[in-house]
Length: 81
Image (cartoon, rainbow, N blue to C red; front, side, top):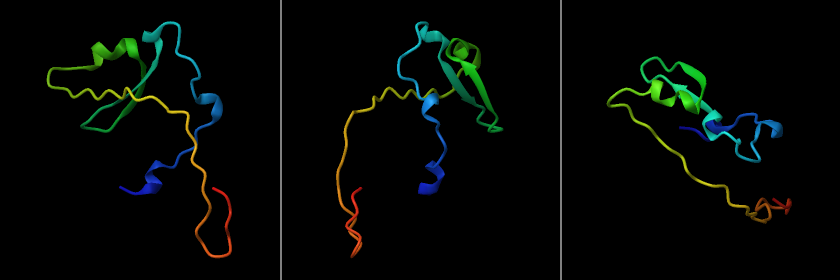
């Protein structure tokens, strides 16, 4: 895995600021393991997508509002980061 694998464009208007009123209407990305086919569904569709023995990975992390301040180490730059 390379760091470049994690570079993608994410327009600010595509980042949810509040949860949906109906949580089961949340968007869901489903990836078929054998083919790698990606489908965009809704969370309410989840029971129809699962079969016995399937692996369901749940990410329940939250974003911590934090900031790190630093300076570039390269000689002569000293730019803030």
